[in-house]
Image 1 (cartoon, rainbow, N blue to C red):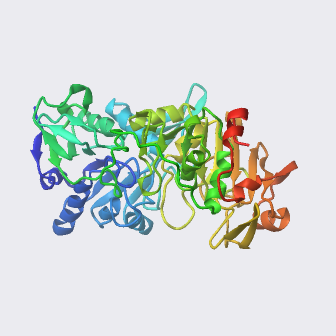
Image 2: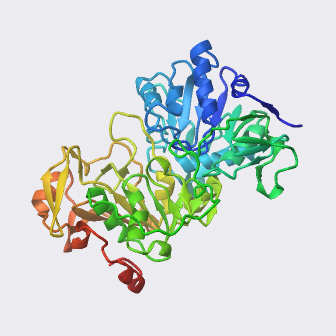
Image 3: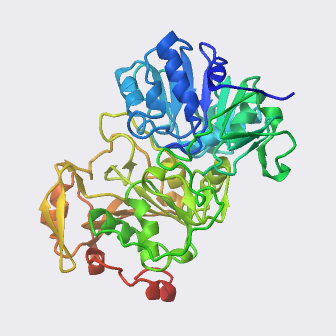
Length: 524
């Protein structure tokens, strides 16, 4: 039976009060059915319906301002919201903070895998991901405010080991996005920057007796799409509407490079300016080795791709993006989540299978707080509700981890002089604390998993030992007592072989790492 082809208004009219609505896509507009979000918000403001929804997205959807799930921050529209990161949906986050609705924050890869488990009719997702972190029910269970009381995560024992069991969730409506739909509802993704969870979501909703709605850029006659290009068969799709002006991301209308239609022409990389973020990213990059399969987190670590290009060694690494981009050059900033010149574009659940199984050699991820046990908090560092995105999945089994960030926060100013670092103004907030607010990465469990962990700042580098942190490097121009230990709530061990950070980190221009990278297997 062919789907109904209609308008976005007719699509939103299919959503009933109390429904569980899953919206596909990622971050800043990647694969997001934005027209549906626009119409849902407008209809509720006009008519007060549909209301009391459960809204779910695997990845936070928003531009850190008013677009995306921030538009759904309308009292009464939702009674519960579930996702991996509400930080880029600040208006919705404000409602959660006020206790206006229930809210859960779960790891991105868990929600992605849960889509597939629900499609298969399983009772939930069993995984090691999240043990010992804030989503462990012995901590918060992912609950984001006092109004949220139901347990949707539990500890189970199988084969003599502890696991976390994330419960299957209701799914009445799945709203996904593709590029083209034919009259039978077959969907192709030729202009999309990611595949995301679209297939798993469509299967989960269909198998649960729900409704599958697809936003597309264009329509085609039946039997005109090549079968090998169809990613979602029309038998799974109930309703299709066209949005001819849908954008790849909120920033980018269409890039043939993000879509994998073309490879970008070779060009000399533009050197990024020398600042504190570049210094930290450079030092993190010095932990990378030729042939590594890598993940670069949001923020400072996104610069590592351009640094590798500046140094002429980008082809020696395989960079990946959790949304499914394998190889090539990850996009950064507002387009982060996309990529160009990639080897393959995977579905998101498959990418997280690879991560959860320990496939990554190294990852560089941000930190907001680090404590005396090496625990990291990346998601709960001010009063705004946030979330970890894919951080927990990525950090759980990766062999070598670099957690990167400025040493202090709030007003830190530095200068670089003749290959050394000078602190002009210290930050007001300490980031190395006795106990993190919430645990995103459990440092106490890392040694038992054989993980090598570094904490990298602009002035000091620490390594994780079974007994806690040890200071192993300081920047030229930095006094250990005055500039490092005096600004920590904890007292790390200091290595007997404490060394100086490479002076080239603090100088403009390329560091000249290509020859050493090739000769020794790592930058030096």
